[in-house]
Length: 100
Image 1 (cartoon, one colour):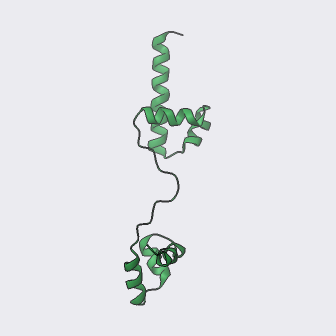
Image 2 (cartoon, rainbow, N blue to C red):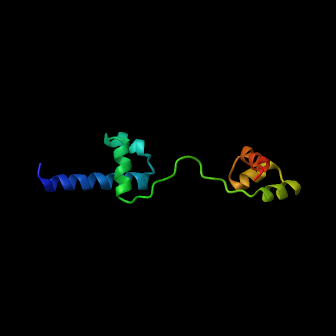
């Protein structure tokens, strides 16, 4: 295999990985399985290509304790507050019970 064809194939692989990650929203593991390579290789290629990686887990719920208390005092049910803020009722109760 010539050096030029190796570089071309390598660039195609990098472009494929970036396209699959950004356009289809596939996880690193899904891409690795699809291309029959290791997950850490996908991660390394995306990092070296300056692709912004998605965070793992649920997004943080930025809620002010005072806002929850004011809505509760106004008679708004916790389930409605949770739906409007995009979090669970358990998260709201945890935030209310937190001392800080």
